[in-house]
Length: 85
Image (tube, rainbow, N blue to C red):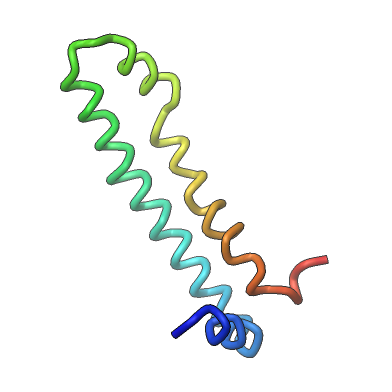
């Protein structure tokens, strides 16, 4: 399945495509929150320097995990030309 086939499928089935986009966005959020965020905390706790602890504390990886669904929606926005103004 290539991008052109996926795009024609999204145009022909907009409801299913939006549902798939929501599921993909939720999966991206869960991955970013549970995997990437916890790995950053683990790596910061293992080092002796305080600079990475401060960086992790101020970046708040669990809050920045909300960027993952936004990036998924942004990446797949061209598949929904009918929703664009």
